[in-house]
Image (cartoon, rainbow, N blue to C red):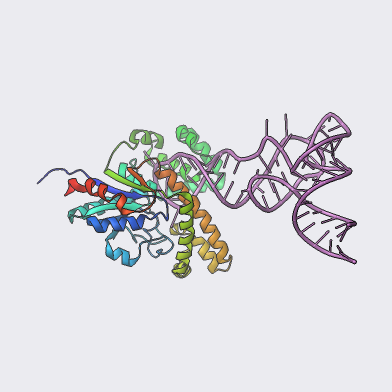
Length: 310
RNA sequence: GGCGGCAUAGCCAAGUGGAAAGGCGGCGGUCUGCAAAACCGCUAUACCCCGGUUCGAAUCCGGGUGCCGCCU
């Protein structure tokens, strides 16, 4: 039959250490699902323990996609993510299975659901030029530039926010258009998928406890060795992958700069901050909110949601 | 019993006459192609209590209370 089926997708989101992986696997097993990873860190090869990837056993139980797609020195972004996620989705559907998008990266999930503004790859020269200007004339100068060409964007962001200043500036240089206009036009109005979004938010106290426990588990499972291997492969703090919480600290421990105990405390603090940011991202928009990864709470709804596909 | 020191937010802590730094912890938020990134914001009507000096005291003086050292 030739007709356009609606694209619909179940999504599981929530802060780190809330039990997304567990819930996703349990549901997948019941409904014949396959998991698409929406975590910006788990796409990196060789970074398994510290990014909390599902174990190999877990991955054997249920097929996982978009894990281990690039090396730690490569860059990745939301645009690449949705292109890959789309094709995973289609393949899974071809097999008659049910896709479940799981992850903690709010931007990727939003982009998957509602798209991004059109944006070609920014030429390397433009990036370099901006970086050069930053070094020569300072961040303030760049911000003033942005004010001139796109006051609306400048108004919305802090003069300290280099990544966004750079983005707006380079977009203008590459496209000849203000990014603010494109954003206005786009406005996240498009709906690429009809979704059923499950949001897990454990009470803070419990979440913080799981975070701490998880750090100890990671250490026990060999986070230090994993980091040491990365360093031997010549992947270090200059790699995009190393912006993942904890790897810098692990490297510092290996180099004898800090003690494990203080590394743990730093990681604990950063992870909590990260979890809070995730909560602010997800709390605004979801289909159901649950406070623990209990499959029985959502299984029936997931089955109902996917009924129209079968 | 004597001598000395300390007493500031949930915790640590600066300030030693002119309208309470900072850190930790906690909390709220932004986010359109580096997002586990980057960025923004809130968190002591007042400094142990009472009295005094002063235009003005967390800051000086007296007394009280508590804690910590040392001594007998």
